[in-house]
Amino acid sequence: MTSLTIFGKGNMGSAIAGVITAGGASVEHIDNSSTGPALTGDVVVLAVPYPALKDITAQYGDQLAGKIVVDITNPLNFDTFDSLVVPADSCAATELAAALPNSTALKAFNTNFAATLASQSVGSNQTTVLIAGNDAAAKDTLAAAVKTGGADAVDAGSLDRARELEALGFLQLTLAASEKIQWTSRFALVR
Image (cartoon, rainbow, N blue to C red):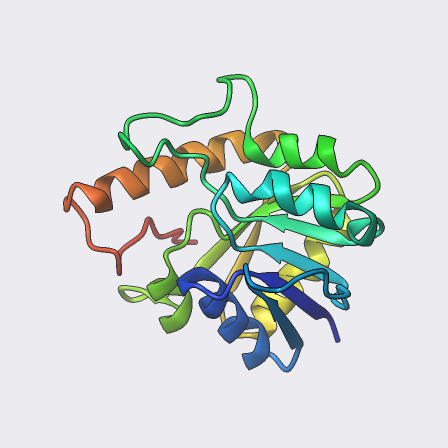
């Protein structure tokens, strides 16, 4: 059984924890007020805003070595909602992988809204978590935890595909912020 440590107790951190615990896995939450706790999870989910990644990697880099680290961020310019704040040829997930060379970085959950994770549905379709990363075993570990919890998971390819996942997340967020879709909506993967 996989154990998870989730940084962040907001909507996304809580929704991810709900899916994972529904499958019987244990979850440890760490929030902004925590100071230096030991990270016990085999998988560490960073359910925080993009700017927080730098501080987390600086403070917990040694503890993250050897762990699967899941980046859920969308590096959106939250002042304007009109662009991503990473270079066009990069993404938050590859920056995270470079900052944590002794960890296995994955990109997942960034194309999901909390409401669709909590309900495990998008309309009449099952919620699907897209997972990108370079380590097949790590992706399988996360996918198994998601599927056991009642959602679906799809391997979206290598960590290079995280850039496209972030672009999709950006589009979805801007549509919701401009009230063109609801925060309970998302793009559904129908197979």
